Length: 148
Image 1 (cartoon, helix red, strand yellow):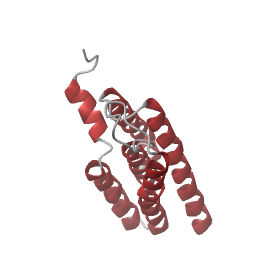
Image 2 (cartoon, rainbow, N blue to C red; image 1 turned 45 degrees about the vertical axis):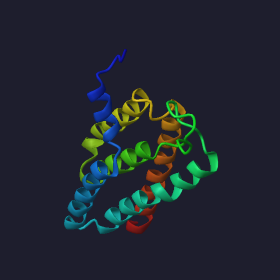
Image 3 (cartoon, helix red, strand yellow; image 1 turned 120 degrees about the vertical axis):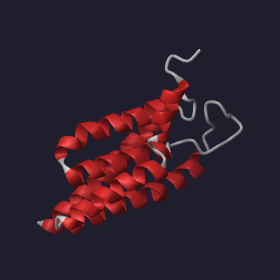
């Protein structure tokens, strides 16, 4: 028996889909570029481009099976969680720092949905949160150096 309705947990998991998260970041990048913050927009885009460059090799290297599909491999770390984190926090940093709590909620909903649906183990999500934080930190550092 599910403790959370399946539709709700699936919706949370879907927030990490590239088709959902990337347009949010692209719109924020366009807004930032329009406001004259092209370097910040560029580094946010580069951080998003690095998500698959970092996640895919780790998935192949670890070949971790999924919670509901022990015969399948490539579940560690969670690409959806990293995508959500980098896209939503990147968008919040570009548009308004007041949106950071919204980014945190969207990222948390993504990770929770992935775990509840059985797509990922909690450690898969945690590892992606750490990787996302690392990518956002590098992006932020590069932004400060280029504008300072």
